[in-house]
Length: 348
Ligand code: KG4
Ligand code: ZN
Image (cartoon, rainbow, N blue to C red; front, side, top):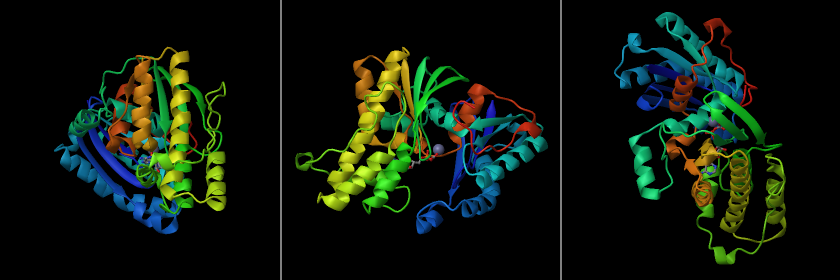
């Protein structure tokens, strides 16, 4: 089954054709990131206008690259939320029009669930990454349930128990800032990047000489019984350190990253033990973080739990995983009932 998927939840316009949920036939993307770098954050109106400009060329490119004619597409999938309403509407309406014109089913997809399905994709690059670093996507379509999924993105930090496809239970999530948001705000505070500084902060942290590490940040909620997170206090603690103490930027970046990763790994492992998980799956932009990838793998490995981590290119937003989530869930709806919903949670 060949699915054309469309993803427009924020500042990326993406389309992809994926066969049977795992085989990528094409992937195309435009981003308005450069415009948001100038303003130090996404201006929703600007992002939506760029979606309108990019949507048709991006879809055309995905179809061309897959060397398919429209009659070869078996279904259209689209991200319906969460995200920015103006951006979502562009993708949803384009998807509806195509499904109507081609007379094929339309499959609505929750963006956060989509992030988890990045683990189901087997690309050559993912396999190469696995060989080189031993921390890439190792599982492809061989997912063993029950699964504990940690979705860590710019807007969300969710721990989810997955008993099967479409059988999700929300265990906990952030009470304030998402992990990615904390990375971004801290990167800005440290003067590392003005917009989306997670990977830049991590690169800076990697330069830290650990022997000069002379202070500790808090690990919020690390020993609490629940599966919730809180990262806004950590960012405030960094602010205080920067204002009152004199540490090299890479040392502060390293301690911040270690604190976030400590909490994410400990709580995910606790959830996996409690629910007898056979696998842990990571998803979302922060799953591109190298210390998170390797430490989760090591901690789970000690307990005999497998870890699925998407290749780095599949952690951040794209349409490939939207197609995969659509294939494995086939949540079909009449076309006129598919609407953009910016406030969806992961289990909606
Ligand atoms: O999933 P995503 O592409 O967009 C959302 O759905 O939010 O995630 C973007 C987030 C940003 O906060 C970005 O700074 C963060 O993922 N991120 C990272 C890394 N790469 C991207 N955070 C930490 N370490 C990284 N290597
Ligand atoms: Zn995302």
